[in-house]
Length: 412
Image (tube, rainbow, N blue to C red; front, side, top):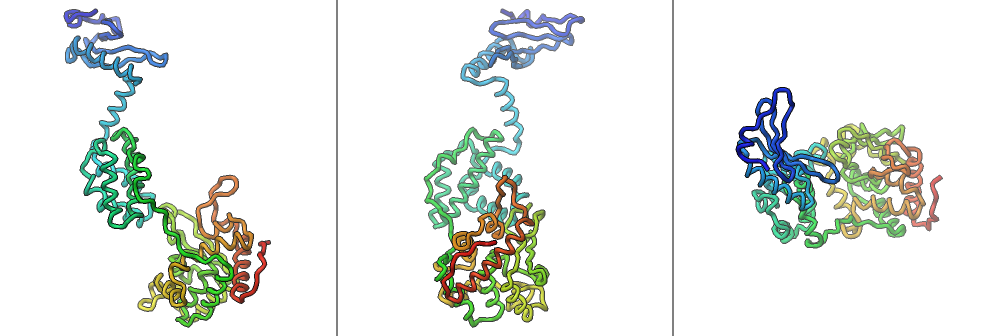
């Protein structure tokens, strides 16, 4: 074993790269020609020889080096690789901003926000600032217990915002996973909260899917006595089954009546930020019935930009309440059928009554789908099939509106 005198007097010949003076248990002092002296501990793990630097001599003396060796041995006995633990500690030290929940959450948020829509980014930041930071923001993530996180989320739940509390837990789950990945915390505590909040099952827009009852709604729309703009929106909603915001904000430049095609720009679609900026437009084939309605409406609004301009400003579209109120006036309250419900009606009846390929239906709904080979759906595909489907659908709606018994059709 080494002595302090040997360590102090150790030198390396000029013609040698280094000299190693062994102590015990794998500890040795390495001396180089420039008289630099460093402690190392040599060990084996998984059959591989490794060495751990323990500091420079004389800053780290013989006794301190032996203590460091023993501490590293204990790490190895616990199943850890001391060298890897050292690397992890250095990575953790590379997080200069800190490890409080607020710091980590905002760091994660900044990395995600570029791929989010503006609306989602604003909602997420607002929820952090309103529901989470006041209770957890200044706490170190490693010191937050599951029960504390649950208490913060229940404050949101107690004001009746069950969906918001559920969304808050999802945000926290992402932050904790990021915290684990960046070394701020050892584990994701949100897994401990499974089943602890009131279950949120999502909101389903009421929709009529019975053909006979839907025929009654179509007849009510035909008899609607309101203004021509809202009446046209009501008539087109079941024919086109696009999202309310996409339909009411349509512009005449998007509509090609000669080609019977409505091209919705990507920035108006319900997509993430990248999808809005770089995605393809959504193509909506127009049936003969839809073209006829739009041609009639063109006489009222074709001089302006908006297909469905509002009453107060022709530069802005009608509000979603315009059609909702019209439906309520006809006796179709939000628990019976909604504007958005036309999408669910079409999805259900096209598949169950007309035997249309679900892939084509989902494509027309502008849902993110993949083909049989797992490739992402290309919005320029299936256009001919969708043209045919939209005409079959419009003809089927005419028969329902006429009150006839309808034999399920198969699209050619």
